[in-house]
Amino acid sequence: MSAAKAATVGTGNGRQAILDSALRNMNERGYHGTSMRDIARDADITVASIYHHFKSKQEILQDIMTRALHDAIAMTRGALLRAGGSPDAQLQALVRAWVMFHTTRQLDALVGATELRSLNEAGRRLVVALRDEQEGLFRDVVERGVEEGAFEVEFPRDAVRGIINMGQSVCTWWRSDGPLRAEELADRYADLALAMVQHRPRRVGAPVS
Image (cartoon, rainbow, N blue to C red; front, side):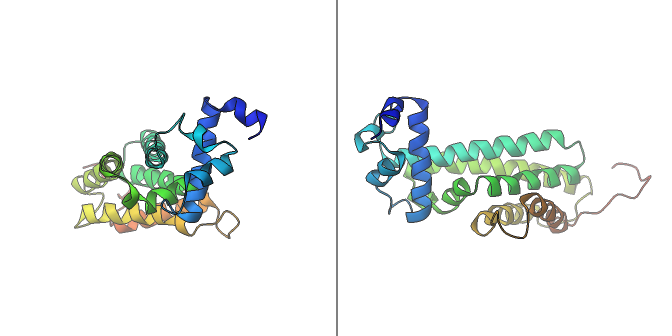
């Protein structure tokens, strides 16, 4: 281990190096294929040093997944607050933020999408609760849009799940060097989300219901 790395063991920098290494390794090898030795090697620390920060590999996985979900919730909630009052604008803002998270935080999103099965019972309960909180942001907007007559979808909860899964899936195939910029993809999916809820544009001059 280098002197510089040794100096950061026990600090926030050392903890982040462990998380970054674990994230890369779990994307390449999966949770069960990643060893503490793999994580330590790529973080340039000893295996023993990991245990100053985390009790187990399971705790590392839980930290990665819960941090990512907290960040996604904060990102989508912030977009929602800035979007104004109409359900269509709010839904598009949510979807844009959701897609941007899954492109700019692609490795986090991939682990989150594939490793729920690897969590222990306590970790699974925590992650599922955060996922439910995230889904609730979308569900509240879509259900309000249906109540106000802005959306005509017959099955709003199914539409919400479809919208969330659509945005989440981009982490599995989008490439930063591909033909579509993240912002373009976000705009495209925002329009698709309106189609999924059967958005009914309000006529100019029509009263708000």
